[in-house]
Image 1 (spheres, one colour):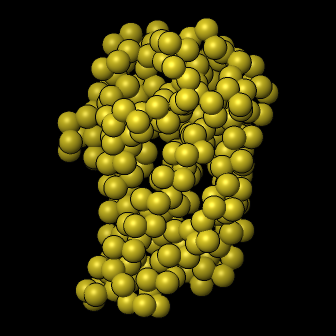
Image 2: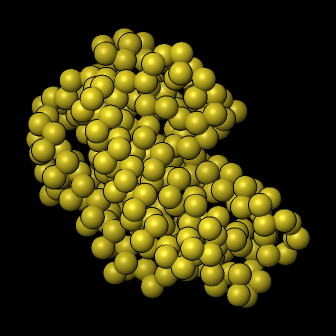
Length: 266
């Protein structure tokens, strides 16, 4: 299985991306959590259009991405996991957990450093919350995030398979926990003990200032509890809360150019 994933990495990742998008999109249609304020076709066209633009931009600007850096680190013997001897399974689990912790820390950083928040607020300006919100990020933020990932992979020297698995998990979980879909409360309470659920992360997209500085996690739920950024539910409830940022509540039909130019507006 590992050899297959390594050999067909681009195909495997694309299959998971489109498979998760289709599965979560169908879940949203069959069991929506909230009514959308913007037509789904408009949202999907612009949010996913930006996502595909970001993918092409990364390929154009970066000679290697995280998986390529992991391959080089393995060949050169660079990084923590190439220095210490661990069973492959332990190195994979350890590398995935550490990558997830750094992504949590990066998310917190993008909220609290003003120049980074100008970029990240585009993700939060979305007036609705659905599967495409999980892939909607500013191109400059995507590039900065890739730079952080490359540095992390260089320091850790994780197994190549661990980087591929983490990239798949990050993409898939971001779509899952941004789902505008209903998860039965008893099931949600159990699942969120381990991973981030849609109701848990939706709090992070509240228009109320203290609330959107909680529930930063994308994958593992432990980080928000460990660093005391966990909030179980929004004060006005899942159906009563306002999604987005107060300043942009009138800008409902946000097109790609509007999103890209948002950080540079006064």
